[in-house]
Amino acid sequence: MYWKIKEKCDYDHMVWRNGKGKSTQIHIEPNGSTLNDSFTYRISRAVVCTAGPFSTFDGYNRSLLILKGNKLSLFHRQKPNESIDLDYFKPYSFNGGYETDSVFLPNENNDKKQQPQQQLLTVANNFIDSNCSISPNSPICFQQPLIPTSQLNEIEETYDFSVISKDSEINHKVEVISFDDKVVDDIDDEDEDDDQENNKISKIIDLNPSNFVNNSTLIFYSYNSEVTIEYIGVENSKLKASLLPDQTLIIKELSFDKFNPQHTKLLITHLKRPIKSEPSKLIYVKIEPKVI
Image (cartoon, rainbow, N blue to C red; front, side, top):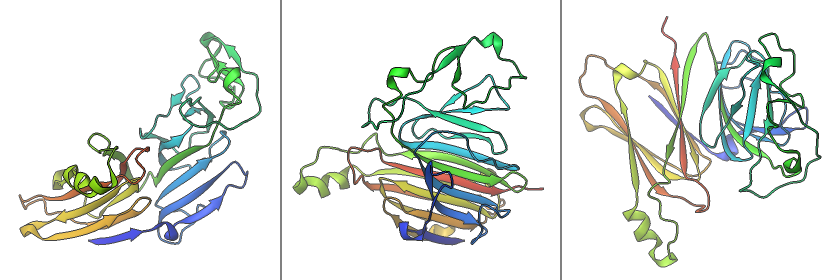
């Protein structure tokens, strides 16, 4: 088993060629791969400045969730009668080979930025069938405009988190561990240490061999959270790491003995929410090799 903590200075930053956003690559396997290579999986964040078409990744599966900013609505050309509205910290998985477009949804709870207005047209559903050739990024919408024209000048950026994995080799799953239910917001400075100590939240991930594949990788990305992650193994052996916001813990080469009834586990303890006005989350990604 191999543990590694990646800090913000370890991430790779890139601006999109179309100038409509920028990405932060948190991790990619094999190490040193690029998007032009046949990589196994990639974990990244992005800032979407202008909604529009997604890059396609044939042979890959994708998971996407919104961290903050404007929500997005996605359209897959292969599913012309459907639209998917992404919500905060709700992972959505789809075929990376789909031709996918997006539009911003209005967000009344955040500061707004000015963008040019555009006209939206509506068509009835009975004009849209499986042979529909309307681009999902077209100003034509299903039934009702996704964004009322009066609100199109009130748009801000979208911050998202993304996982892409090669379908022939990897199964991946994204979950969000929330620490918002018991975190105390209004704390006087002199009482902060005592209150944080009394309001620690613990979560347990049971590493049951029946639910994991040997050589799996677990990835934890800390969003506005200070946490500890402690591995409790056979005969109570322990390994512990601390994560600050925007840091990532990668646990590789997990192995399991299906004949040993003693389960190992991960104990996750929330210590602090640095920015009290924002949610406190831990994004958990399970990467499993496909068993042939």
